[in-house]
Length: 224
Image (cartoon, rainbow, N blue to C red; front, top):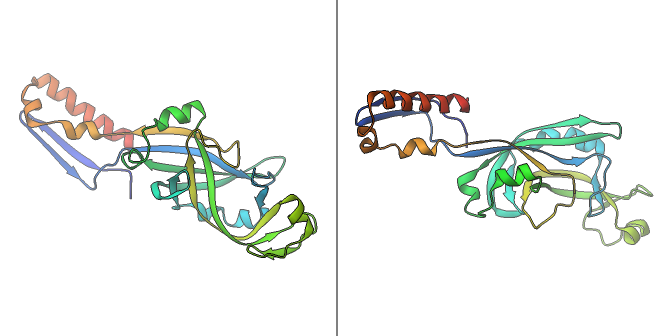
């Protein structure tokens, strides 16, 4: 689903006309780090760095859900990239949340949570193999006969994996990667335009109509 619109509007006394290419959905754009190539998660796991680097682009267009609930898809990942550091690299994403769908699952204010640093991301992936970080033996993910290192400390490196999406983790829940927090980039909503009625327009003076016309176009320009 696209989140941008292109329209022309004509506002006259007792009349309003919209020409829309598509319906507008109120959205929130966000950015966040989903993982670091060198860091272990609280689940004692990390992804193979070389394979991870090759698959960063596969994040794009994957779904965003709420708290790892498959039926609670509220948006999509629009961009993914890596940022190099002195320890390795970090994987960052940007995404879009459709606010009217999110409101079906929670009454929390996403924008406020993002500004307060209390909104997190948690990666979702399927993996077929795990590697021991000590002896570097590779085992099928569902193997019941792994090495003693994995059995004793539980640490594994994911191999042969597929990224399936990302979850917004809402408080009081916490993600497996503590610093995978969300920054809200912007929130856009044109729903107020659809509440303009002919009766309302009939109460406005010519000057007020001109002002309203300008406000509608200004709102549109902010979406481009």
